[in-house]
Length: 235
Image (tube, rainbow, N blue to C red; front, side, top):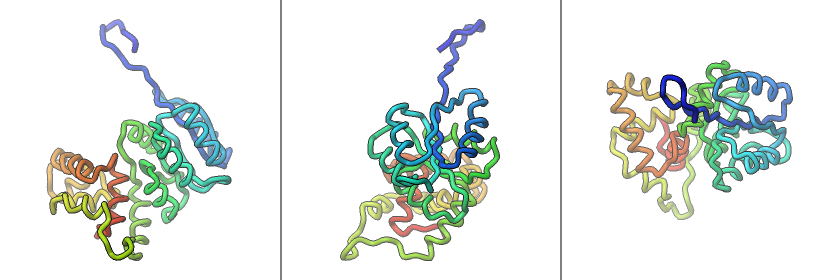
């Protein structure tokens, strides 16, 4: 923390980032975009999932940009290991395809969101800051395509048809909260949900906060995973 002439204290802590992708050219491009942005620092680069996990243990970055298709162990398994280790690092998945099924697996493994690799530099920077702040990033285009495919599949059910823990958590939600959760699953922002459901944005924020608390979800991405596991798919 530095004290400036105006007497105010400014926190100069930078967001530490690791880039994990087996494409060296893409790695360099991401580092160029992020490394020149105030408040961001690319602390390491990994070419496969094993290196990604190792760097997260060594550097404990705030965010890792994770490609899902890498040699060794893929981004899904790398995400699972990072989350299981209890590291504070949050995973932002990068994908080339709208319909990449690996993305959904990464979310279920604990990723905090996903973004298309062709996203604009501004969108990428905003996504990194959002995830570092403890929130989730769900690219609407990717979300719609993935969930449309998943909606055509039967929701997973346990042996004997017993209820899952996710089912019980969903029962805690009010009708309005379920409506909001469905729109979150579509990748809509609070502002977009407010417009769609004719609510104040502050009301939507309150609903989302209560949804996360009732589902014991760390962020919007995990809430979406829980909704799918219980068959509460967007309609």
